[in-house]
Image (cartoon, rainbow, N blue to C red; front, top):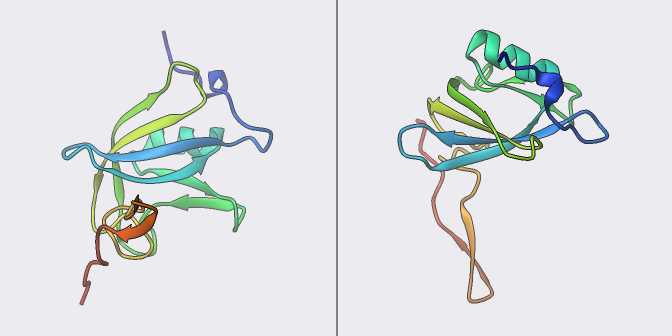
Length: 121
């Protein structure tokens, strides 16, 4: 049976959350949004493409920073309302130059920074 992006469940804005996970380490790197066309572009090109809500435009991860995401596997959950993209990440995934956007933990009621920005110089 072939995949149909229209079979996924999108929110009222036509978006679905997409979680990016490192295919090798299994680290969760980031979450962003995709629409049907971004999904189709990702599957066609192998370059992970998101929908930027702030810019109202497609966002090919790494297009300007060089911190690209190569698609390894495309999955969706049992409710068809969330996507998991397993990727090969080049450079940091987070715009703060950290490997992951999930770098803050709450421990004993306090915010704890788990990783520092990567020095790109």
